[in-house]
Image (tube, rainbow, N blue to C red; front, side):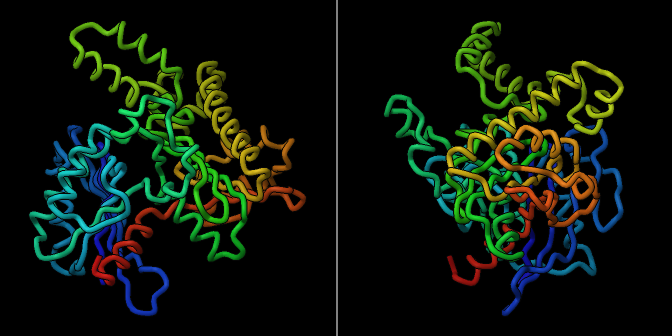
Length: 394
């Protein structure tokens, strides 16, 4: 089976084609690509080592460009489509085939993830209109965290809101699941793991026996540790203060604060720079005090979460770094681990500095806790789930 995987965000769409077959452990990636800077004057399409400028003012326009590429002469035909969906809302649970009813529920779920879900619903509708005869499947970033106990998911709020679905869902679940899968395939699965998925969005997850028991993100992907443009956890009083300070009506105030929390907070707010850790690192190395402070705030929040989960699980057997920053920024890994040395986490700095895009151990031989860098494989996990659901008819 050939599965087209679409991983769409608010300003970019990643896509890949996987092929699976009987007796094949992992679907094979035939190609992948990305259309970025959607809505900018010049968006960019990358595919098979080549890139070109395109005009894409909206997600629906961008996906049509992508579909033209993947259906061009000589490209492998598709038999199913899988989508990464950040938030399923209160009604949907496991990964599932997309139906009109599911699309309706996803549209309602936009109130939980207004930055992510509306764009993916727009994309799903456009692709379904183009490929009416193949099955379409939604894979949710929250499913992996459904093993969390109730005491980890409940908010101490009035029952009426909890009954509306206001609880901690957790995100980056497809990434975490792919990491557990890789660790299991590489040998014995560590009993107590912390997964630090650090990228533009960041989360830290506690995993016991391969299952999520707690994570930093909550109702939305805005909470938890400090991120590129999002603040992470805030005193609720801060939100009330911000809403009171905004001028205009209620809806205008909500929109302004929502935009601030999703696009103008986090590292960009502390540094006044672009959402690029490499650029922040360079500024810090040249003596920029705000850049240095932002990096300390960021790594401190990750360290605190990892240390807290270590206490929660009664110890830590393995710490894993993933995501764009986690996989590629050796200094971030070193700074996080430096704060965890008292609980037995020790890096091998030469292994940590190596630039290798593969799963690898970077801890010292005498480290009580193993430390790994593991590339996230979200798209592969989507292909695996789609293949399973298509074969089972679910």
